[in-house]
Amino acid sequence: MTGKTTERRPFVLVVDDTQAIVNLISRLLERHGFEVEAVDCGAKALEKVEDRRPDLILLDVLMPDMSGFDVCRKLKENRWTAPIPIIFLTGKADVVDIVQGFKLGGVDYVTKPFRAEELVARVTTHVQLYQLRAILPICSYCSKIRNDKGDWERIETYIHRETGASFSHGICPVCYGQLKKH
Image (cartoon, rainbow, N blue to C red):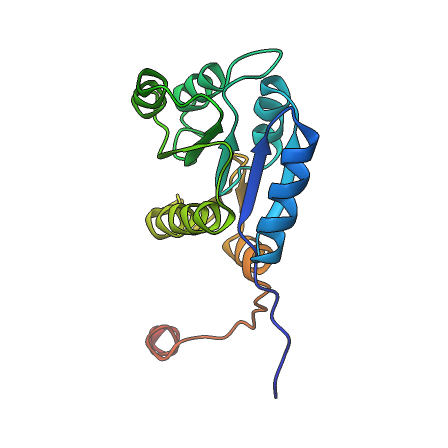
């Protein structure tokens, strides 16, 4: 029997106030299998990550409300959002800015105008690295998992939502042997 499984697409948050750039990046990344959402300012980015933690953030430096550097700083100060990889995508190409981006915790720095293939390759690489190092906090008493929002939920619920896998419950041979003894 073959069942359809729902594979979770990596989620990328694009933070840029130039709609043409957002449209271009969204189409590009969606064609390569990413789920993309975009916001046009730093404050909205900080709100968005409270609702759902992305696998990667593409972050412009020059924005109207706060700089991408300030957004990065705030994300890295929060233990729930600190692990999110941030790629700065900006027209600021000075070495001082590039170094500042890395010092603040950015994993990469891409200057505009960018090459599409290069951007996709960098995003793909950093999402894969992030997913490889992901650790699921699990309660050693009840086996619930802490999700991206910080809430504790049943492991079955979490895995089903993230992978589409369904579960059936049974008793393993070791536990069955223990039950028979009682």
